[in-house]
Length: 356
Ligand SMILES: *Cc1c(COP(=O)(O)O)cnc(C)c1O
Image 1 (cartoon, rainbow, N blue to C red):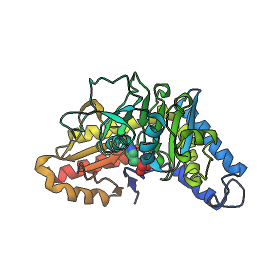
Image 2: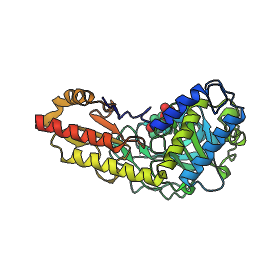
Image 3: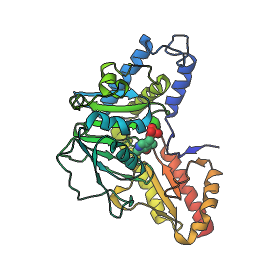
C-alpha cells in the first residue's frame, strides 16, 4: 500500500534526498567510507558544506552581505541566540502561536519584550493586523508559518526596525524577499532535512552590535567566520539538506514549489469547505499553505476517531491534529506530492457518502 505522509515534522522529504543519503551512508563521494564516519574536515565534506550555502543562496536569491550557516540545537536554540546576538535593550515579538510564544518567552531573559498579539490573548486564529511597531526596539521577531495553528504570514512585511523570522515550517516553500530581514532561521526537519540541523540566514552587518559578551558557541560570528565548521557540524543532516536543495532546483526552484503548494492547499481547503462533515479551523487569507487544520462539524464530532482510522487504513498517516487544536492537520510540505492530497480528498468524499 502506498503511504501518504502528512506528519508535521519530522516529515516527508524528497525520496531522492533520502536515496542519495542512503547511498552516501554506504560510500560517501567515492571515498570508500560512510558519510557517518567521514571527517568533517575532509575536502569531500568541505565541498558539501560550501555547496549547501551556495545553493541555499541561489534558490532564495539571497543578496550579497548575507551568510547561510548550519548549526545544531534546533530552532529552539535560536529562540535564545537571536536575542543574545541582536538585543541590547528591547525587542518586539508578534505572538501568533505556540512557537512564537516560546521565542517571546526566551527573549524576556535578555531584555524588555513588547508583545503584539490578538485580543483576547490566546486567539491564534488569525495574524494580528493594524499594529504599530515601536521604532526604538532593536528588532522585531515574527513566525511566518504557525505549524500548530495553521496560520501563515504570506508576504514579506515592511518593518521600520530590523526584522527576524522563524521560518522553520515554510522555508523554501515560496520566494522570500530576504533583504527585508536581518535574520531568518529554522529547524530543518520540516522542509529540508532530518532533525539535527538548523539553518540561519544572517545579514553580516547585523552581527557584533550588542554591548555584552556572548559565549563562543552562541555567537553567530563564530560560525560565519568558520563556515559552519567551528566545531563538528551535523554531517548527515547537512548532507541530506544539500540533496533537498538540489531536488528543489531540479524541480524548478522555489517559484515552482510555491505554485505546487498553492495548488495542493487550494485543493484541500476547497474540499474541507465543501464537505458536510468537516470545517477548517482557520478562515480567510491567513490560512497556511503548509499545515492545513480542520475539525469535524459539530454534529459529526463523534466520528473523529473513526475517520482517523479510516484514513490510516488507506495509508494516510500523521493526520491527527495537534493536541492544542484537536481534529486533523494535513502538512503539505514541498516534498508531499499532489497525489497524496488528492488521495485524502477522495477519502474525505468517500467518508461523507457513508456518513452524511
Ligand atoms: C517545529 C518548530 C520549531 C521547533 O523546532 P526545533 O528544531 O524542534 O527546536 C520552532 N518554530 C516553528 C515554527 C516550528 O514549526
